[in-house]
Length: 139
Image 1 (tube, one colour):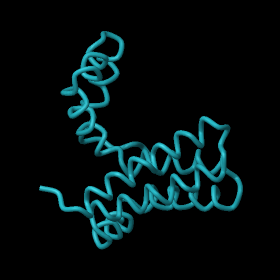
Image 2: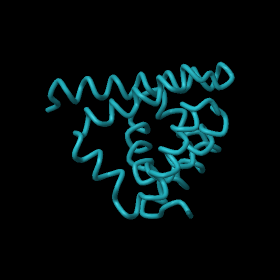
Image 3: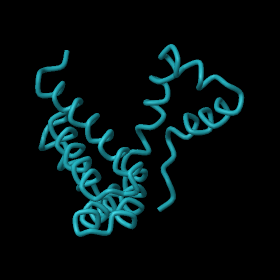
Image 4: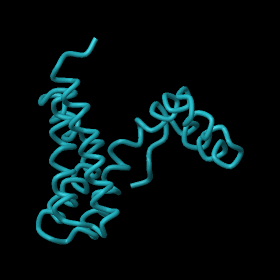
């Protein structure tokens, strides 16, 4: 069972991803990207807790991903949104690549999305990602 802080955290994380998507759609709008980043980090912190969030970002195996993610975040705040999002995107992939197979398994169970993920071309791609559950991105 989730408590209220975790529910709010999931909502903030979702809004963070939405604002980031809108920021990219509006040609890397600095304001939307910055708001998305702040909401995403706040949501993750509320969802798993401040101590676990800090431990996640400072784990030795996550140093490169954390540095890229936070460096990209800084570049977006400073005013270089395109370069910042590229660096941040790489950091995001390195940090969260272990969670992608779990997310794909969940998405396969949803009615409309599960059907889409079962199409022949998409299924091959999904199987390749889900099969690499124990592999990490080359750094």
